[in-house]
Length: 142
Image (cartoon, rainbow, N blue to C red; front, side, top):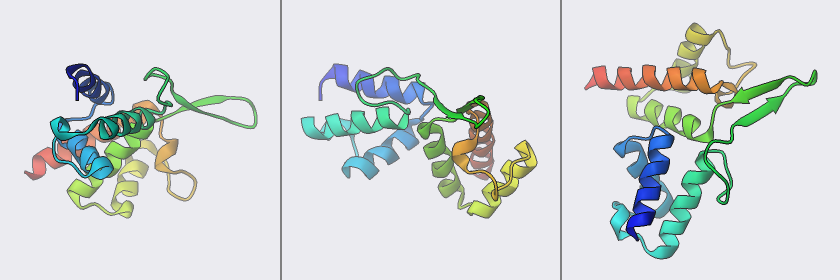
């Protein structure tokens, strides 16, 4: 791996608000490797492509394109990124939370219920707030 690729990976991670633990969990999930420095060129490409996909963008575009949903009335609703969804799920696994417990929090905090919404339907701001809450729960647990 080149130093440029390493910087790119950490730059994407910072933009996605991934900490060391989340980035390395994704690394293990995608490549089976424990360290970025041990990646072969093909694994490096695969990993960078995966990170870009988590950001909601194909590999050849920038990082900030938001996912949107358009209602039948034509209203555009910005949706959280795949990276945010991944982070929420990662934190829930780290906390040993069930889907029910997560949705209790989402319902209480944002007034959304699981029968009408999915985690993908959170706005970027709601997802960010939820990630902060989950990180605080994790921090207080240790």
